[in-house]
Length: 121
Image 1 (cartoon, rainbow, N blue to C red):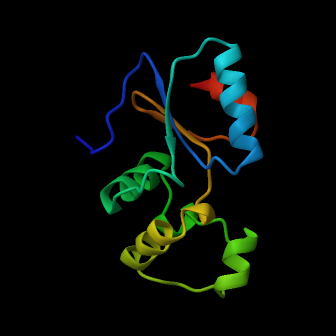
Image 2: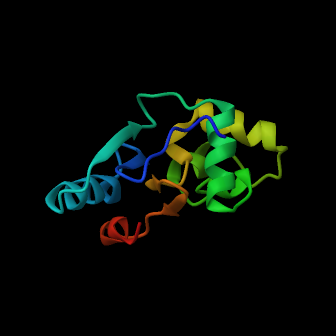
């Protein structure tokens, strides 16, 4: 069992409060009456275990959680190939570069591409 508590009755949404897509996703979910547990990654520091678990749930590598096209990533870092631990530290110190929003309900996890994706889970 992982560190992230999940339920089939509500969606846990990991998001950045600076993200327009995340704001629209939250608004869409609330309009649809979907119970949401919000985790703003800019206000709540994720643990290394949580970051690794999110990547595992999405069936991707930890480095693939990084939005390498994000302006903050481009301005501070060059495209690199770090170890998993280094990618985790990068996300912890610069959460704005993590791909998001990420929705988890029970055993289902998705990277939300459009706000209406939230009803897929």
